[in-house]
Length: 421
Ligand code: IZC
Ligand code: ZN
Image 1 (cartoon, rainbow, N blue to C red):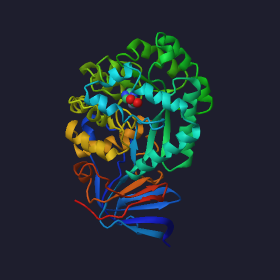
Image 2 (image 1 turned 90 degrees about the vertical axis):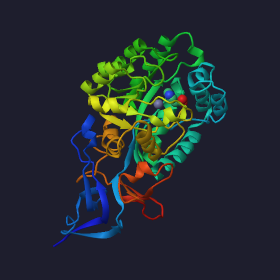
Image 3 (image 1 turned 90 degrees about the horizontal axis):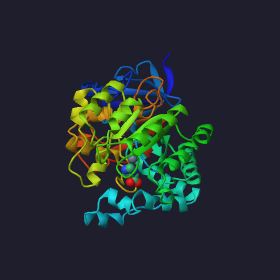
Image 4 (image 1 turned 45 degrees about the vertical axis):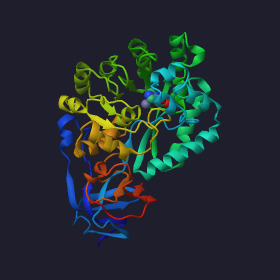
């Protein structure tokens, strides 16, 4: 008697299961296992099998999805976003054209601080509606799990408001969200001359955030004109003591030693790393801290020096990629575009890139056991692409290659289209 299950995907041209017992480090990111002519079985929201054709022989399904030779991969994981915010910053584009830098705009009370003003003024309802719009777009590009940071409040009420909105968003739309408390994103104008007292006030929020289960991670912007390495060390140590996983905005613009700090504190991830030193890279390889690279931000800031992904991979670092979706330095929900920029400017291969947006990204947000891989028992989160092979996605840039997105066994995005490549 065949076993009855909900759904079988047949005629998969290429299947990437990304099956792995941990994040891929360094050169092993090149080892991509591709199954040609594959099938995937799904029952009660979970994967039953994801294998070569033939595995379906013992099963019958209520629904057959014919993939007609398309590529199928795990749902993508975007491990660094700032997607809950008020307002937008299109007016800063002209300032950039005049040669005013990101940190100069911030020092003049714009940049992050302009979004802080708008986020403080926005109601919870407004933030929710806006968040829904952005998440709908992220999902349409194939993202089924994402991280989201607070940090546009910089006061108790607004930080908690942002985190509560993120929790409601997690519960009310398909993308699974992991929250990070980033009260240490900038120094608000009212605390301009007392950054340490400001950080203490943000640390005081940790017990409440923990009790309400509003965030799993704490993060800080370690940068010139924002927080120093020693302020960051003190802050993150307290956050770790309070039970939070650690993330750091490290060496984004100026090389301050953020990578070394991340390794020293055994942070789960260090993000940006454009200016990371050789020592910092080596230490991250040893500590297992995942590098979350954000090349869309470098591109959008109009810079020509990108994070040294090749050196990181050679040194054995676990590398991941994210959009950094935010209203200032990376206004895009499109992780496929980031995959193309990673190929062109980080010189990462397609094989490395697929690890960076699935399994490694999931580990970077503490979800390695749940997301980023297709294997029996896991949630059926997957993308059916309008392409026949995995190399095609970073290659044909700036457009959306999604055919269908499945979340927990249900098709949640359906875009008609042919097959490229
Ligand atoms: O709103 O500018 N780098 N934080 C640190 C950001 C970029 C987000 C922003
Ligand atoms: Zn960021």
